[in-house]
Image (cartoon, rainbow, N blue to C red; front, side, top):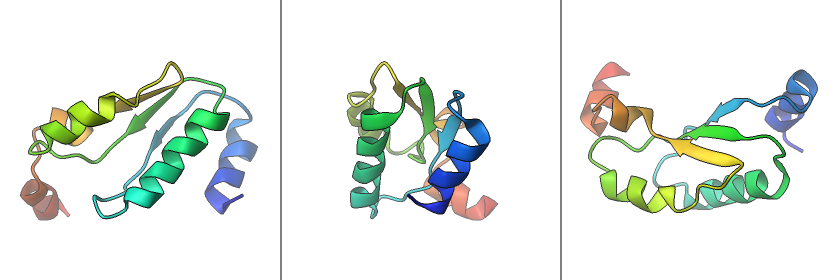
Length: 91
């Protein structure tokens, strides 16, 4: 169990929470591993933020297909109309 997972288990002890992950497009294996972990063992509904920007609507349409009753993705950068350049400028 990773440090983050251990902390979540200790601090939240089964409570519902929002979990935002900052994986980038080159981290598909990490994203897949995270998706499997949540669908296999997360008992409470979770909203999970994804960093798809406003130019990646097709990725969002595809990602929505993986929503379950226990895990719903949301896309704040898309909602804010932030592009990759806008994100980089902000950072």
